[in-house]
Every structure is written in C-alpha cells, then in structure tokens.
Image (cartoon, rainbow, N blue to C red; front, top):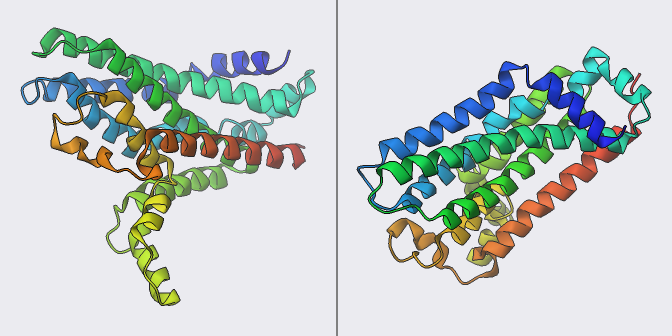
Length: 279
C-alpha cells in the first residue's frame, strides 16, 4: 500500500479518461504543428523551441487544469476517497500518489511533444537539432509542469466541490499567467504596480518591478529557458531578453521561483487536506 498504490490505481482509472488522451494529444499536436509551420522560416530548431516555450508558458497550464483540479476533490465528491483512505494509506500517501499519477501523465505529454518536435526537426530542418538542447528544454518544461500540477493539486486538496475546484484552478491560471503577463491591458501586474506607486506617492524602481515580475511561474519558466540557448544567445534578437545582469535575470533565480511555488503549494494543499473532514 502507500503512495505507489494510490498512484497506480489513480493512473489506471484516469487513463481511460478522454481528458488524459486530450492533454497528451493536444500538446503533442501543437508542438508538432509549430515545428512543421516554421520549417521554412528558421534553419535552427532551437529558435523554434523559443516559440514552443511561449506556448508552454501561456497555454499549457490551461491544458493541465482539467487533468488535475478534480484529482482529489473529485474523489471526495464521488465518495471514492472513503475506499482509498479505508486502506492502510495515510493522507500524505494519498496526496503524494495523486501527485505522481497526474504529474506522470503531464510529463508524458511534455516528453512526447518534445520527441515529436525533435523528429520533425531532424527530418526537415537545415541545421541538425542538438539533442542536449532538446533534453534541457524538456527538463525546464517538466519543472514548470510540476509547478502548475502542484498548484492545481493544492486547490483540489483544499476544496470539496466541483465548482470551487474549477474556479480555483481557473483563478490561479488567470492570476499567474493572464494577469502576470499583462494580457488584459487595463488590469495587469504593471498597472497594479503603477497604482500602488501612485497611492504611496513614489514610483517603484525597475529592480523591484523586475523581482515582482519574476515571482510568477510563467515569467520564471521563460527566463529558465536561457539554459537551452547557451552559446547561441547572439543569433536571434528574441534572445535579447536574457542579457540582464540582475539576480532576477538569471536562470537559477527562475528555477528557484518554480521550486518555491511547488514546495509551498504542496505544503499548503497537504495541510488543508490533512485538517479536513472526509466524511
């Protein structure tokens, strides 16, 4: 028994779901389409990886949400959790098993998508793709995936209804991605910081803005992809964003932000679940 049993049973049940097939299929198809569409635009496959990273940062969390937000809340709603917790499983085993199961499915989507992109690049691009760059890209993308799986799992662990879990996951996506990246021109991180500065009668420094901007997993993920482009940062203008010298401009800081979100989310989610009534 334990986390392995929970993960195995959850994966066995989830793999029959169209949601699982959808997550893997949609992400793989989108990555393949990007590489196919840009084969006549760029000679270097690593440049296309940047466009894939934009897809991951902006869209992939929204694809992950249906996979994760009912992982625990759904069991509580259906009553299946009574069976799982009736076995010799601790609550920590249960949460850990759910994390392994849902992360495993999400990781399969990432790895398959990167593999498809590599195969397309190998067959059609003028420059032979570098396996190390693709592996590095897969690694930082898996870290980003773990971060959002942890956030959505925490929301699922802390809620007891489908509506709350769904709105919680969507709220997390809109705050951490849509709001933070500034997709809404009137209400976004920059306009809020400007408003706060006006109320305080001062203007926030660029350094403070830089740190605050990098505190979301989305910007942190894009910054962490600097690790993919070592030695070629001067080849394309889009890589100019990696030229900063501040700590928040470094890939290690970006990875630390994602690790922090992962750890805090899992801790908060587990504590909420551990204190809740399951009956």
